[in-house]
Image (cartoon, rainbow, N blue to C red; front, side, top):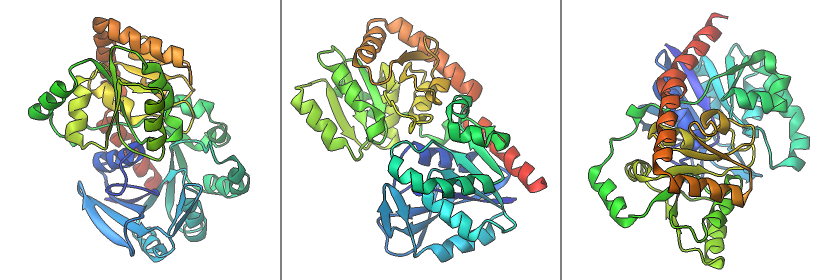
Length: 372
């Protein structure tokens, strides 16, 4: 069995986001592989090992952060031990600290290496000038790079520079890795929110575009429910208060049982992200899995690969309040049309985005690397 080390700065149980779910789904759906995960935790003082869903997770204690990049010095010996154990190291980009780890401890070793390229670096422009030489060394030195969609591959200047070693493997979700719908919890949410609502699920970050969705909802007959927490939660709540908006509610973190109940009840899933930091959108996959119509912005990323305009949902103009409101109004006013789009989203999910399909492609990738 091939031994693969998955490397990223955050993972369960410390954080719960789309990228963490991608890594979990890779681990659960690769069957020729024994996976381990290396991540950083801000809640521990010394290296720690936990087991979740049969995945062995090695957590390194956080030393400090610079521009959202985590560093962990106490765990360098753990990283070296895991590199010695692994046949293949699968990095999840971007995380500049892993570039340094790779260049110091892996490059030149007899190890196969893969980068799953989750997104371009968008916000940290000033730091990017200094980081670029390291980044290009890192990307140049690995065996393969994986893009999550053909859309992102074509629109990323960085990926185009390494096109000769890029494969496209879309993210996928295994339905069996999610709990069954709890009828009592579904009834609880149905009673609590009897009016039609649109649902957002995710970490509340600057690029998610929630300020657009919030303003677009003002005065509507439907609600927007926001599941998740994050760095700009306070700002968004203040926006709702300042604008006197009474049909947007923040539900905070919800476990999978409640999250799935809400997905089953919503009129549609909204995903107003407007920057390329949002390269794919796992919430869109979850919405498609539940046969829900999707609303997302067209920014040349994987979001448009999942959500096809007027087939699986609606595209809106990035950062455009009027466009977003019109899309929600249309799905609210035309329930049959919304259901039609949702069924098409489910069909596309089954065709392209199941965990089984993703896992099979990663299995093939790992096997091919071991044969080279």
